[in-house]
Amino acid sequence: MPVVKNYSCENCGAVLGNINSVSGQCEYCGTAFTVESIRNCQEIFSNEGVTSGVPFNAQPQTLYKYVRDFLTSNPAAPSDVLESARITSCKCVCLPAYYYCYTGESAFTCQTANNVKRTVNDSSGNSRTVTDTNWTPFGGNVYATVEGIVSGNSDYDNVIDNMYKDYHINTLVDAESLEIPATIEVVKFTRPANELLGKYIRPNVEESCVRMAKGQLQGMDGYRNLSVIPGKITKERDEKLIMGIYNVNVEYNGNNYPMYISGDGNKVIYQSSSPVDAQKETALNSLKKVLADADSALSSNKTLTTVAFIAAVICFLFMPVALKIIGGIGGIAGGVFLMVKKKPLLQAARDEADNNLNNFNNTQQEVFRSFDANGSIIQGHELLGI
Ligand SMILES: [Zn+2]
Image 1 (cartoon, rainbow, N blue to C red):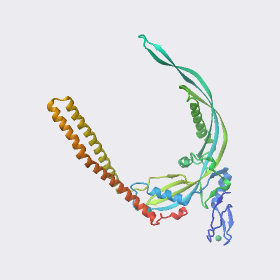
Image 2: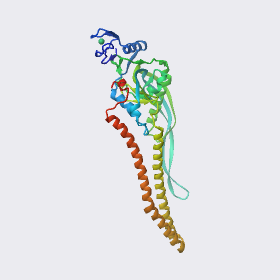
Image 3: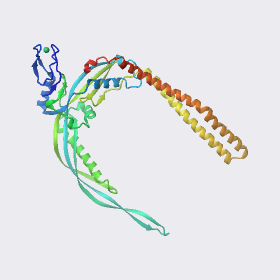
Image 4: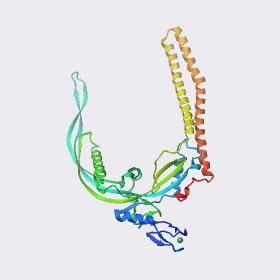
């Protein structure tokens, strides 16, 4: 049976400690209670044969940091975003998933290259080296063990893929000792288990076998016509899981910004882009453009300077005397002007543009830093357990 930590009585608020039964009675006020989340879990365990899962054990501060970082992530985020945003919900959702571990065997055939060098003499008596490639039939067997996690409900393929693709099975917790909150939402299995073999497991095994065959051929001079023939696939392990996921929603300026955070707090998926102040964004873009223009003015000045000096050298070397003097002196004078007079002006303009951009970013960050420094906290924080 899963565990609800620090369960508190809904009637008197007394903390009743860790609860692992569906129902009980408050030892302080005598009120009978039913722990919905344990009941829901028990249902999915017995109906679906779920054996383990990812617990909900992200720290409230971790959840909060994801929300805060998201809200301030756009360089042109509105200045009041932390003040005015509100966390409107934090749902703990149990997503259904399959874990599989299979071993596959494949035979492969191909031709491998063997390069042989030899010296030949041509008709004029010069010798040179030529390489002959001899092709030999080659083949063997490869074995691959693959594992993976597939969503048990196609509506959540994206979430499961993004969060748990590389999840290590060793960190899964037994269903019996899974830590869950007092209220959870359980999503049902809709993907039939028999869909897995053809759609996920077999392609994964075949891909791995091709990779392993290619690995075996790496030391050769080359290979061609590689053909990998899929063989037997054997099940090693196969389980149904429930994956803890926090579904947090933040509201700002009438818009909703939902996000998913993995049960262990290690991964986050934002479902939308973060709030942005359109006016600020325009200002920021024009600052960026001024800097880019200043950069390109500097670099064309550099090119022009080089051209002027090269022109001077060409005039000195190749032109008749009159042009030598006019062109040469003109080129040098132009080059020196560009280098000595023009460049410092352009450099100053570039530095100023860079400064303005930095100031913009610093002012922006300062607003958010002082929000934290004042001890302010995003509204609705209590929903995260803070
Ligand atoms: Zn009570």
